[in-house]
Length: 443
Image (cartoon, rainbow, N blue to C red; front, top):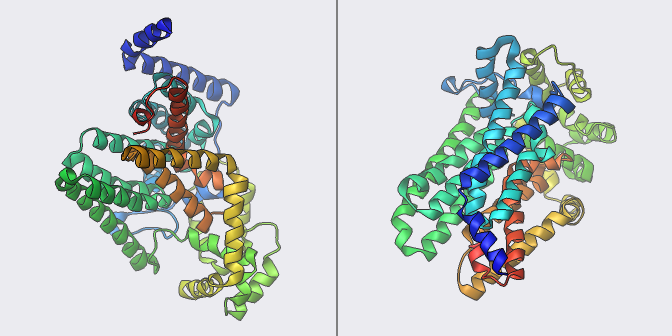
């Protein structure tokens, strides 16, 4: 026991920068091996990648009803800088962002987990895990989502360490920029709101600072509503993204609830198309506006990249009638408020929680039990773990509501949060074995 304490003391005396330097070296060498030797020149893309090559210009209120502007702007930047080397330079940029995000991930873990060994393992895992690495060579915004989520956690822990006006304001505003990267971050506005409300109730001395956080949330909400208004003026729809419309059309079709949608023409279309192999056949037939736009997206997509199967499907989809969005939404509204649809959605929730992500939900339920125990036993709130749990559950809510079968991709913004929850539980179990105070680990 004495030797273990001596070793722990020695390790704790070593500067974090030495550990971080070693971690970065290991991750860099592994990435060179993986992408330089095993998969040289790898580029991944699909039909979604094409849709991010949309022309946007917020200054002139030119926005796209399907894609928020952050990633299209990144593509536009590299188009202007790189010309023919657009793809290679974009991927190099994504590699750099991914690698540099290891640094804040380490320091965030250090403040949340509070076990040096677990922090090192978690950071190495983040820096070398295949589902993280593979996004670096994918022409989609998910790679930047990792860095965005870690930045959110960084601001959160900085605020919790030293609550101040700047960090409170940043915590409120940052969700807007992440939403512009990927609309699934919309849940962050509600998570941050709950976070500030609880702090306002339980920490009276912090209220003057929390007003700054509330101001940041107001600014973020105004930004989101302003963007939706741009979409209405330019595209006729008050939405962040109409992708959810296509996904919901699929669910309405697949569940059989479409028969109660009250639109004979749509019912006939779905009857004829719903059993075809590609699940987007029904949504694209009814919401053909997307396929019209897809032709314009493809003109800006690098033509030397060979079309994938799903790209060919989108490019060759018949140009049918463009039905009014209001009519489509009315049909969906009628179909969704039916017993058939909600039975389907209940079964879908069960499949997600018990089937597809059963092991992950066990992890989440364990952490919820720990957070509840700490609150009722010690009267303390585990702010970081509560924040992580709320965001993860919010992501699952959006997946359940509108996501399709590519659920792992929809969950990507949650990966850094999930890693923090898992690392915190690991540190907790170690603390229990060593008979340490668990409240010091999870708070």
